[in-house]
Every structure is written in structure tokens, then in C-alpha cells.
Image (cartoon, rainbow, N blue to C red; front, side, top):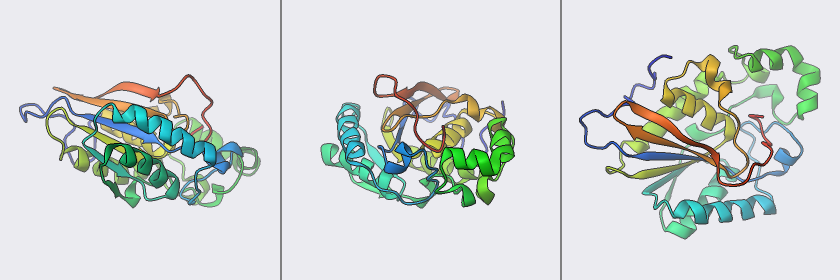
Length: 227
């Protein structure tokens, strides 16, 4: 393992603010999720089921009494965040740095189409090699843009405070990997998130640790780019 390279320390020895939590919440279902079509940074809206998922999850997350909400500006994440805002009364800050991975020519293709056209590239990605899927972003570049935003918002929290980050499966996975200090080749070891499920990072004396992963419902299939 290596130390996080976000430019902001992940540990808080002596700063009096340990005990903070970051909830990383994936957006609800979209039609492209159902079609197993790679979304990436394409702006796809929620299905009716996705809206219902967000409303249900929002009621659960509201019980954590979050202090702040920050979300990707893509509409599937923004609409998911809006459901939590409606329950808690908190404003939502939107940041394009929390968007899903840009995947170039992969975007809009189904899983089978990607395997057919980019099979070797797909296999290299799954092996943990640095791959620009479809000519897009590296996973480390996604972490480079997303993790500092998450940490900046977490730094505003009071002691014991909770931040909810509403984003996308791939972006959440790479951000978790970066905040835990894992080498990027190990990020694939963090399984994908089902629609509207979340992971929780808690802060202790030695930095961030993974407390929950893919929480929020009984096990459901992971339908999305990170599958």
C-alpha cells in the first residue's frame, strides 16, 4: 500500500476531528443500467424505479443526520441527491469532478459490444492494468479529480460530522481506493455498488477506513459501468 496522493492528509492525529464519516452513495437506476450500456460521462436520467430507489434510500440516509451533501452534476446523480435534500432540508453542492469516468468510444456501447470490439482492452482493465478505456480517462485520473473534492468537503465537517457524496460506481470505487491508500492495481478488489447503495468511510487516528460497502438493501445485481 502507498500513502494517498490527493495532496490532503487522510489522517487527523491531533486535529480534534476524528470520528467524521463519508457516505459515498451511488445514483439510482437508469435505462442504460438495465441495458448494460456503458454510461460514463453521458448524461442519462433516472428511470421511475431509480427515483423510487432514491426516495427509499434517502429516508434511510437521513437517519444518519448528515451535515452536508455534495453530488456529481450529471442528472442521474443530481436527481438522487435531490431526494435526500428534500428529506433533510440540506442544500446540495454540485461538482463536475464527481462525474463518472469518461470512457470515450466505450460510451453508449453494451457490455457485449465492448467485449466484441475492445476485448483485449477490457481484459487488461480487469487485470488492473492502467487502461484508457475507449481512449478516455485512466482510473487514477478519476481519483485525481474526485478524491480531493471529497476530502475538501470532509474537511469542513465538525467533529463526528457526516458528509454524503452522491456519485457513480466507478468514481466511488476509485475514490475509496485512493482514500484508503491502496495501490490502483488493487482497486478492482472493491466490488461494484448496486443502484442507490452506498459505502461508508470512517475516520480514525490512522486515517480513513472502510466501515460498510454496498450497503442499503438485500443483495442485488450490480448494473453499471463498474460491473
